[in-house]
Length: 372
Image 1 (cartoon, helix red, strand yellow):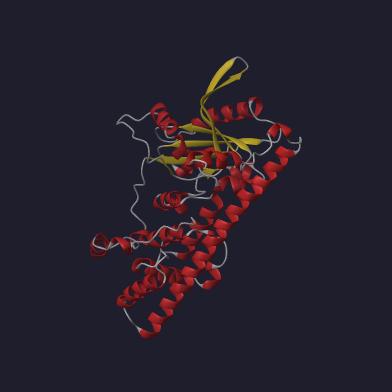
Image 2 (tube, rainbow, N blue to C red):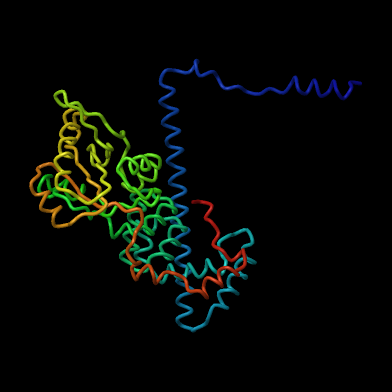
């Protein structure tokens, strides 16, 4: 009789594991096949996640609409939502997202959007947590839709969306003083204008009391990821203090970017003080040099962006009329100093609401969508 050890050894000897053939044995076209199949798998996963998110949002809207209609008909209060939350969790113990607070958000979603809006892009493409940010922070429907469109277009995460709302991007987008309409073709001028802001908010920098261009430039590069986020979609950092040789003379551009959406280089000059018309001539030299020395076939003419601590709007407009190169002039600020607009102030919770939030049960918080 064979021992136990002998039996195990025999079993192991009979066990075989099929090994895939070596990559070197594959035909030359195999890498193309692998790449094609892998890309289809990745694209399919993205579509599946997007479809799941869209179905989740539509379902949440429908639930919120049921609650809203019943509440309007019967006039009942929050206790019914609390009871509904408990019963739903009893009936679907494996499901998440049916806390009282989340049900109230569903009601708010249905109250904020008609069905025709929620089933269409861009609202249908936003994950649930993006909708919560919009509901919490923006009251005006047109403004809320504007942020939804930008979030889908830019592929913003919820944190980026929240940051853009907090920085009041909709008030700043496309507002730089410029001569784009007179220096660029109509097909480009609006697109370039919308790529600007005024002011640019650099709330991630920590300036000392004596502000200067070099310090600001250094801090922007130290936080280049946040700087790129503030600049907007399509910007890629090329370098700082770019050396430009022009007929034996040397010039140094503060910051150079390339915008893949605009297909142009963008020269940014930083000024720690007030706008001076003389700055435009300096910037124009840098732009012409970049066009001649760095631009490639297919690149469109370089645009310039002059960022000053402050500017006289009319003086900037007058100064730009004398230039044929496309230049935008905008302020930069370490923080937004203006008072909060009414629509945002109305979105802030009251003291009583804050106290209620702090004492709420843990399971009464919105549950993060696992398909996000």
